[in-house]
Length: 76
Image 1: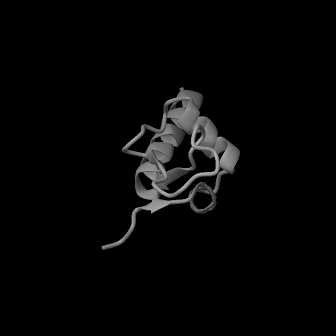
Image 2: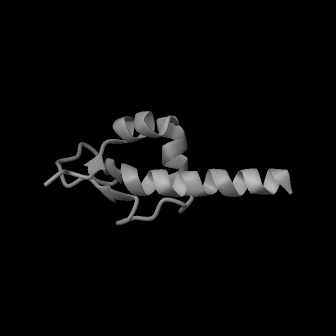
């Protein structure tokens, strides 16, 4: 079984966006908890600000959809 959850660094690199942009998408609510991201189950230095793990496949779907919608709005 393959682990679908990856670090923000790996996810951002795979999606060709910055970690800051990835974090912005999560904090704005576009990336949904349990679908696109989850809190890391591993020990944290700051339990009030846990590290997020991301599902690259689901994030890529959303970003592609947002990109297509953005381009449709520009073309209109």
